[in-house]
Length: 255
Image 1: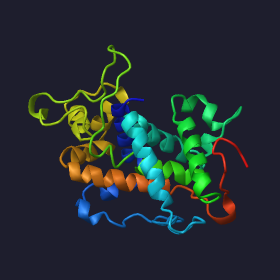
Image 2: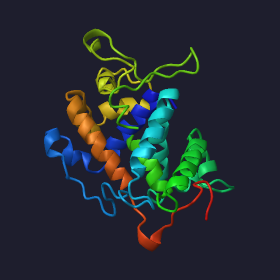
Image 3: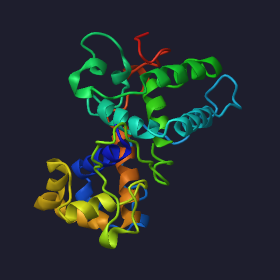
Image 4: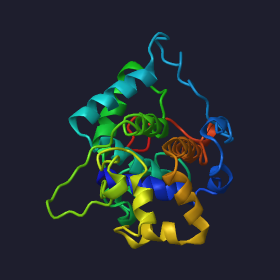
């Protein structure tokens, strides 16, 4: 999946969220703590490893960042993985389970990737902090790390010179935007009727979403704030706590 395709996917996710109508016209500074996050806790893993001095979240983030710098399509892939995982029975990492008739092999999830990387990452985590970090949180931490770097720069990635970019970059008064940045040029383009996909163009034409598109097009800060809130809300879908779930040693297998 290309970076810009991931951008469009996340944009669609945000517009699909029921809370967008509530937050769409707020100043970004007012967005803090607007969403109830049941079952989630910032810094949950602090001091949870056998060696209390280990910062396991920092360890995971460091490995994900290293992977990103060797493959710039990593973080968009994690965004897509979390999107697909959370929309089926919540964020339980069920998409990682390999086998016949599983989410992972379903046609709707074709193209989701980075499974091997997450298995390798989980093995490293288990070595220094066994039976502690859930596979669902592994995806969430990796995605959050999809997100910090993408907010600075989301590089263009093409496998074919025949590809048509969903984000067409600048042009006219859009020259200050770029197709290799995580900006709001996508919304400007569909307002100009330049959407490549029908589903993208419909966002600007449909009365139920057009005002939100204009709001995002007019404020990079607002879009960034709403994006962060949407990802946090997505991660909070049907969180498994206590005896409702378990920590898999290998993310692609049941214990």
